[in-house]
Every structure is written in structure tokens, then in C-alpha cells.
Length: 524
Image (cartoon, rainbow, N blue to C red; front, side):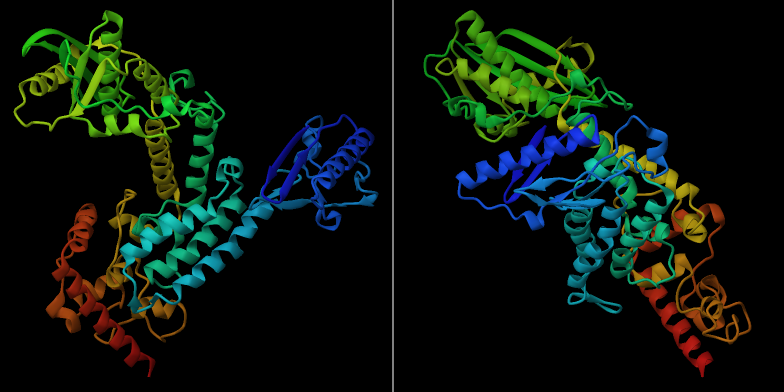
């Protein structure tokens, strides 16, 4: 039995070996819960209470065929009133169905998208409005997180139909942001705007949850025993959550400079101990490749404080990592390892001074620590340090990127676009509508409009086939604005150079304007 309460929503999860046992256990539990809430002067609306019955795993074949494993739907009662049993219900923004196929939730996302996209109508239109770069930021920070809420639960795997549904949902935003023609392929718009497909991102979020929260080793990742984890900081003593040292202590025995460095993926840390401006001792540590420079900086500070405690010395630590010093002062850090370091540093209060020094400012101790940290990336003593959450995020981003690239290469749509953009790129953003028309071929061109019987002929008024290439490279009516036609292998470079050149984009705007005038004349 499991009970979860969030705001005014309650979820009660109960398992039983038979329908009868389930009915008895659920009804008794509901009555007990109802009684406790009444004692707290809280009311339960039985008419709003819903139940969903999940099939057991004892008959997986029947479950896959969508057949019920129970001859009769169980009957549950709350305060002598039968509550409604449904195939799916919405809890905390997610539709949970009795087969865990998430079809209802994915269908719900369409109406959610339509509601969100209404906000775009007041800020953008086909030929006016907010810049594409701002709309992309809006999508990535507002729309996509809203659509993928709970993807850590429902993003594990998708049927082909579900993938197509997610494509159609994302397409609504893609067309609005790109201002392209409605016939533009969704996969092509993803690449043109730098938006990964929703199903790929959702799967990445699911895997991240499995690794970070469930500590699963089922994926091509490091052993989760070597991965940091979050803790509940409310259980920690406030004095150990916020560690503040004086910048200097007057009676220090030693001055210690610490530093961290990263070279070609290798991470090193150093500790240089000075006595009266003379080097007394030094330590070099090499961390694992999955560690960060920030962790190396923090590890060096932690080692210095531990060295002082072990030898009963008083020291002043100088570090050029302001972020490492600040994280010790923050009370909301959830990292288990950072809090372990805070616990160690707490023991050193009174024996340690900690201050920031500017990097590469000619301070001899700091310059030496920097040199030793770089050397430590090669020959330092190995220092185990758990992989940070940022390493997992980087892994998931690479996972999404590779899956997106495979999806793009296998796509049957956007063949012309793939000639210009063979590789996906998060940072790519085609902000020119004319360039979008050209690389997709879906624009004000006779050959395109003829496909939809808008024009009687696919030919230009000059007699040539009126496609995008014709107007950009060959047509006598756009001769003043012609581009040099690239070879097939040179098309990606041509696209990138035009995208970054405002004069080239202006020429392409003129080409599309002329082709649009020609199309309008052909309609008459």
C-alpha cells in the first residue's frame, strides 16, 4: 500500500492477489482514510473520486492484446458510495491509463499545445513579429518543458503511431516559429530550427531518470556507484549546510594555494603548501575523466583542510575558484558529495582561512598551483571523486543528439533539405524565411504551386522549370541576384555561408520576391 498527498489531491495505490481481495482492501482503506480526514475537518468528494485498475503481470500475453484479466471490474466504495472505475485518469498533470501505454496522455498533449500556441498569435505572424531566435528560446524554455512534463515516467518507449502523434503536436509550434509553408516536412523543420523531435527528447529524459533516480545500470553509462546523488538537505544541521571561513587567520602556520585544471578531457588538481613564502610541500591529484574542473578545485580545497586537521596546523587557503568558495556558503546544495565536503570543512572551522585570489595575476603561489594542476592531469595521484550530475546531463544530451541524427538519416522526408543540412545541430537556427523556402523547395515557386493545382503549369514565364534552383541560379528575371550553383558535396558549405551572410540573405529575399510576383501573374 502506498499513499501520496499533494495539495488537495490524494493517490492511494494498493495491490492484491485477486479481485475480491482488492475490493475489500481498497474499500476498507478508503473508509479509514475518510475517517481520518473527517477528524481533520477535511471533506472528500466521493463523486470526484476515481479508480483505475492495472492488469497484473501474471498474464502478459493477454495484457499485450488489451484483454482484461478480470471477468468483472472491481467495485470500490467510499463512505458506502460506489466510486467510478475508469480506464484512465489524470493525476498531477499526467493521464495514467490501465495498460500504461500512455495513449491518452499523448493525445492530451495536442490540446495542451493548441492552448500554449495561442499565445503566439499576438506576437508573431507570417510576415511580422518577434524574432525567430526569441521564439526558439521561448519554445525550449516554456513549450517543450510543458509538453514533456513527466516524460521521466511516460517517455520509455513509443509505438510508431505515438511517434507520429508527437510529430504532429510539435509541428504546430515548428510551423508557427519557422513561418514556413504548411507542407514543409516535420523532420526537416526540426533540423532547420535546431529542435530535436519530442519522442527523442522524452526518451532521453526517461533514461536520465532511470540512471539518476533509479540508479539503473542498464544503459551504456558509468557504474552508478561512481555517480553522485542528491540528498534531502532539510535533515542536515543548518550549521553544516552553510560553511563560512574568515578570509585570513592571523596565526596561520602555512599558506596553501589550490587549483584545478582540465586538458583534453583529463582533470587534475594541485595543493601547494608554503611556509614563509617558501614551498614546503605539494600534492598532485588526477581525477577521472568524468569529473569536472569545478570538482577538482573543490577536492583540492577539501584536501588542504583535511591536511591541516590531520596535522593539527592552522592554514590560510587561497583559491582562484570563486564558485568553489561560494558553494560552501550555499544552503541549498543537494549534492551528497558536496555536503560530505561541507561536513569535513565544518570540522576545520577555526583552523582554516579561505579567500579568493585572481587567476593569472602574477601571484607566485597561485601560478605554481596552476602549473602543478596541469601536470597532475598526466602524472597526478589518482583521487576518486563521484561523477557529477552535469556529467549525466552531458551524456543525455549526446544520447539525444545521436538518436536525432539517426532519425534524420533514416527519415524518408526532407530529402532536399538533407542535401544542405546532412547533420543535426542544436545551435542551428534558420532565421530567414527566404532561405527556408529555398532549401525546402516549399515556397512561392511555380513548380511547387503546380503540385497543388494552384497554377496550371510548373514552368516559369521564361520557359524553364520554375523550382527554387531555377530562380536562384538560372532565371533571367532574377539574373541580378543569382548565386553560383554549388555541387552536391558543396551544398552544406553553401548553406552555412549564406546563412551567415546578410548580403546573401538579402539577395535571396529579392529572388523570392520576384518569384512570388511571377506566381501571382501566372494565377491571372
